[in-house]
Image (tube, rainbow, N blue to C red; front, side, top):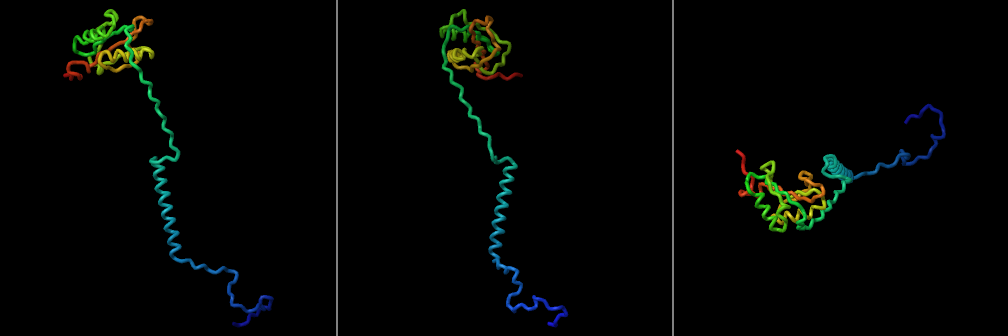
Length: 188
């Protein structure tokens, strides 16, 4: 190499070595399979995160699910036949005579004839026979009366209040389930 015309300095008198570019680290030799392994692992992680994110966004999984409330079973009422109640029977079907027949069943079970009133209802399409009671403490007596008449629904309602608020009364509404056909009759 031709000599330069620059003045000599201290870097011109360095000993000769076989090192070239000593300030740089050696290039590590990465094997191709290591790169492939890392790429495959990254692909699997990205796919898993994508699936989880999609399920989370669509609402199919929840990170913090709300606890489901436990429903306490209502205490079962023990039926009590209490003949001190007045009983009103309303026939809500088109079939005549059902209220009188039910009155006979109730009187036979122990109620006084004067405490049981039978009559017609304002409609003729009541679906199922139901014993209505006004106060919660009357539920056991309503269940007992339902058993006496051969089974019926019981329901608390203010729809059939007694004439005298001091009087205890149960109301039986005879439904289409007690008709001769046992089901509602079709209307033309």
